[in-house]
Length: 289
Image 1 (tube, one colour):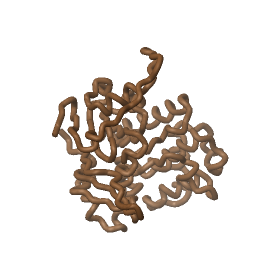
Image 2 (tube, helix red, strand yellow; image 1 turned 120 degrees about the vertical axis):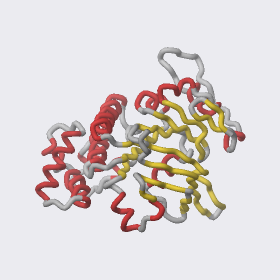
Image 3 (cartoon, helix red, strand yellow; image 1 turned 180 degrees about the horizontal axis):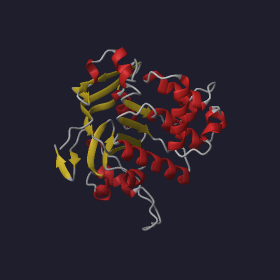
Image 4 (spheres, one colour; image 1 turned 180 degrees about the vertical axis):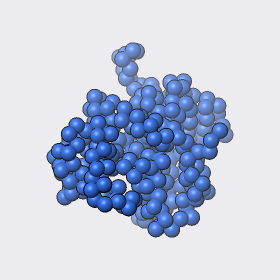
């Protein structure tokens, strides 16, 4: 069995506030190989903080501690900031939730993608432009030449998300962290973006951390699923086996979702048990702890 691309063990993320310490992530451990790993949970469960921690994007008053965060044999916690900048973008890239807030409003989308390439490759501007046009075509944008010269406010939400994916993938990273990349898109565009991600991950042999709150989407798209609740992982399983999940929190989330094949008059409301915060964890169908 090949070694995982990313290994995270005992990750804690806390924020010091005037009202005390807030534990956003509480001692989670997981691995990502050259696969599609879904991380799901409600808002505030800690899934985004987990993704940002890998790239050391948590700033004060946030505090990150972990037993180990190892990427492709490199201890990320041991790197200084200069070395970490070489990892960000070039080896590990992250697609944020809303492209309208992630893109520079005073630069054309083409120049922003080309800049991401120039930062990590010693090439002339003409080569960066050519590579950018190829990347725009790879994410299924028609007429890349025209879109290259557009500003962020001139593109739709779906196109903006494709631009962000192109920008993150142009340095050819080994791991992509996608933080709810389809949450603001309609279903048709959502499927198109997922198909693009699937193709690129498959073709490039990358690893993908797909952060989402949509269990049905993750079950159909990912290979494995990690379920987070209150800053900790409560269950991990194969995506194809998600409907057979055993943890009561996961079962409650699934029961609260509408289904076309089994319509019900009234959806279930999730009743949270305080014991879930520190109770047993389910790993591949088996209770642990």
